[in-house]
Each structure stands twice: as C-alpha cells, then as structure tokens.
Length: 276
Image 1 (tube, rainbow, N blue to C red):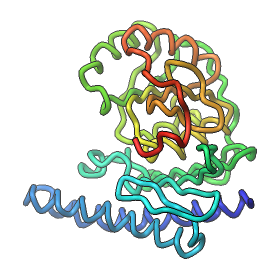
Image 2 (cartoon, rainbow, N blue to C red; image 1 turned 45 degrees about the vertical axis):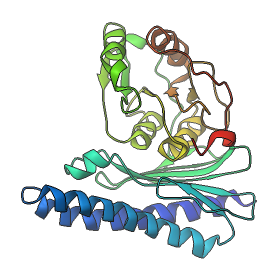
Image 3 (cartoon, one colour; image 1 turned 60 degrees about the horizontal axis):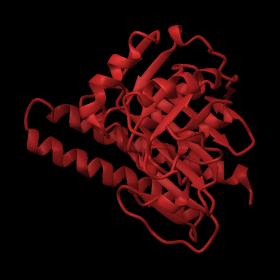
C-alpha cells in the first residue's frame, strides 16, 4: 500500500472540497441578512456539493475504495476506506467565521489511520500526515508538542455532543489551565493541537468523520489521543470521546475531565464503531 499516494489523493480531494465550499460561502454572504430559509437551504446545498467534489476525486483516483461520511457511505472492495467531512464547523461557516474545515482520511480495516488532511480554507492552512511520516503544515514539518505546564495551556472544548455538561467542563478547566476556547470545527481544532496553535482538545460524542483525519495529525506530530478510558494508538477512540493533547498534558487533563464526564460505556476502539 503506497501511503504517499493515499496522502496525495487526500490532499487533492480536500482542496477540491475547499474550493467548492468557498464558492458557496461567497453566495451565502449575499443572503445572510435577507432570507434565513434560503440561507439554510443554500448551506445544505453547499455541504452536498462540497461532499460531491471530494468524492469525485476519490472515486476517480481510487474507484474501488469505500467511503464513510455524514452525507452517506459506500462499500468498497479494497483495504482502504475514506472518511470524509466536507464542511466541519457548519455554524462558523454559516456566519462567515474562519473556524471551519474540510477533512479527508484514509483508514485500513480495523480503523488504523493511514493518511489524513485537514484544510482550513479561510486561513489557508493545510495540515497533513501519513502513518509513520510525521505531520506537515503548509509544507513545513511540525515539531513535537512540548508544552508541559497545564497552568499555561490553551485548551479547546467542543460541546456539541454534551451541551448540558459544557458549563461544568469549563468550570473544571478554568482554574487549572491557562486559557479555554470553544471553536466550531473539531477537525480544525485537532489540526491546531498538532501544529501548536492549541495545546489540547476535549470533544465528546464525535462521529468518525469529525475527527479521523485530525487524530492522525496529532498522533504523527507526537501528541497523545484517547478518551477517558485510556489512550488510542493508530486510530480514533471508538467511544467517540476525543481527548488530544501534548503528551505531558494528557493525563492531568484526563483526570480533570473525569470529574465531570462519566467514562464511556465501551472501551472498544476503531472501525468496529465507525457507523455510530
């Protein structure tokens, strides 16, 4: 299996999705103050069109692979399955904020991540990795995250999965960490952790397409990924709860978050739960 080829395909597909999403976003800007219903319909069309742009690249260059995503899944006949999110962070996308992303990942049977790309079109940042190859952002290798002081760490929190616990999560973190931020796109947040633009992310109850590519970016950059049960090597946590951080921050953050969030009921990890 040629991992460089898979990474090149993922990169091409992510860029195709980013161009399409950006085109639709320009049209959305003109509708934003005029017609809420038309705007929401346009955003739905944008997701579908960007998704199709990504899938067109994948099916043209890897026609026998399967594809998994929020817009639908297709079976394949090879040992590669693509995991796609054409617009992660749709609220930020809707409001014209920069925190949205296109993510494309390739995974093997069992969920082992092979290649992944997260493109942040509004900021022009493309972060990519392949298994064993390290993480690269805009053609520059990413250094291993070295933050070890929790009191100075910038921690991102995604609350979409468990909104009722968001306040308690922030209350637990604020006295112990440097800063807390809430972004729109989990994939973009993971790319920020991988590239040192954030030190950690806690994001519960995710789907595979929310996090697969970003998880590989963090892991290949030398960061640690897991859930409140433990670390997850080479894949995303099957529970759907994702804690990603610089290695020395991961265990202290896990202890803090465990005071608020019950541990996941399943300790399984990987492709067995990709359709959750």
